[in-house]
Length: 520
Image 1: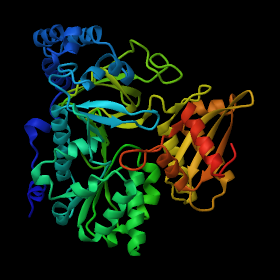
Image 2: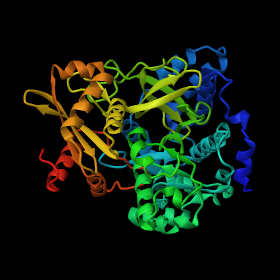
Image 3: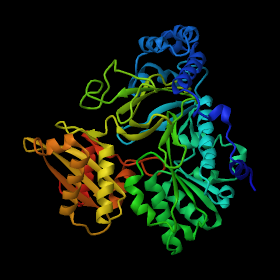
Image 4: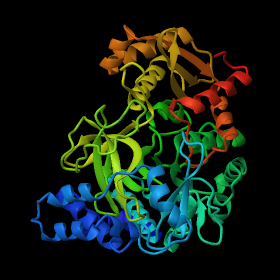
């Protein structure tokens, strides 16, 4: 049996370095902050914001004393991407050493997301690469918590469908997709399992990459797949169509686990299941360019926050006191530590990391669902919500509503997006839903509206007041991917935005109008 299989089969844990169950989340995070501050104390950032004072406070304070955190908040301001890049990260990109993290930054992950016009340059350090690898191994080892997994699982290949692993070098640093940076650091013992392999993974042309994977598919015994749901689904459909089989298990009979992340999987689940010959075990990850934040560590569990591996977390209550109508965070928001947040409430996350992010607003919103296990669910983005008139409609509401309606009406859902628009003197929501079969649009609209009223009391109130109408437009699914392709955001870790606003909404509506699909 292969090395990885042996490790998993025996259920090896690395308990001293990875287990969190018997340790206080507060203590874990306090120790992690001390490590981060100590490593960055002599940097330009550390000197500017008096890291030595905070380090001294942590070392002198009693075990459960919180004075260090008040000092940390007092000394270090909060940052979004533009602020930290313009003030600090651009210096590291210019080749300067010891800016926000010790040494010279040799890698930058390009992360444009779904709502930004230009690429973000996120610094990646050797410490961050090591932390991502370590958390990845934690999730692999967590398979020991799944007792019914077949023995074949531990001997097969792991297909990781990410962006191109090709990196650009400008003489000072390498830049590219995070998957490209981490792929260059894959441990030797994992390379035997890694598919599609270095040569195919390096291709930047997405369609060529998929075509080569399709041709190689029968030669591989894939037991685990990982990637964004939309693109994994497209790959499965291509393989099934090319070989004329009924489902993906006719090609990969030992396929057992799907590791997903980036977007909520639930809206895709019905259409995804139709491509399978037997059920899969679904495992979720929360891996961003800024760090590996959380992963699903146990069956039926949610995302468990990583509290002792290169990331210090703060939580900002996602409300009108801390964020304006456009989702912009105020200068000095209320912030809480891991043990202070409450189940069922929504928070935005601030990260301080071993790559030189400090009190950095990553832009995601989460909800604590299990305090004992430090488990969260991702509910959306700080700027991806709709509240034109107080309806406070989150991406989580949208996902649950459209998933429920798709299940009730029996259609496979692949993509959707929502926009808030002016309607006469008041407001309306405009839904665009990817459906590749005939559907009763009026019934779809009524069911969707009713479900949203059930899920969200504010929405229900405003539907009888300022939110006068919702419009539902159904489009062939390929239109969504055609638009992504036109923006240079096809494949890999890219995903269609769930909420469209401003220039992005204008571009989308012009695109579909030009294609003749809908009049807006």
